[in-house]
Image 1 (cartoon, helix red, strand yellow):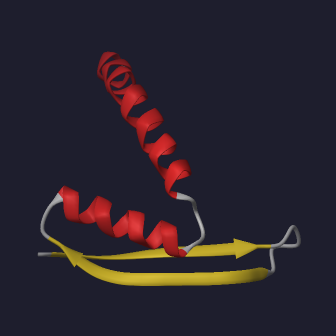
Image 2 (cartoon, one colour):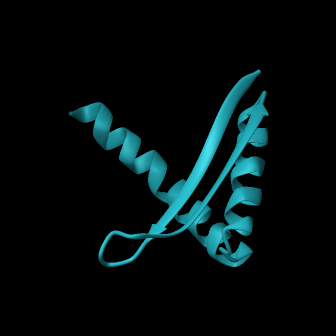
Image 3 (tube, one colour):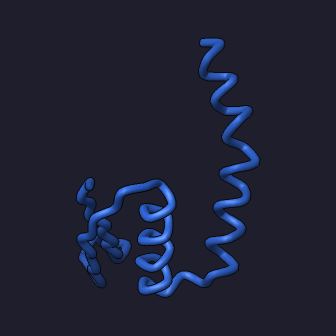
Length: 72
C-alpha cells in the first residue's frame, strides 16, 4: 500500500497564506488514488462538474501528449 498527502495552499497576491488544507491517506490502486483526490478537491470547495470537466479534458489530451513526448 502506498501512502500519499494532498495539500492545497491558497495565497493572496502578496503571497500571504490565506487558506491551507491537507489530507494523508493510503491507496492500493489508481482508482483509490483518484477517488481520494476527488474527495479532497470537493473538500477544498471545487465543484464536481469542474472536476469532471478537468478530468475529461486531461484524458482527451493525454494520448496525444504522450505520443508527442515519445517522438522527442
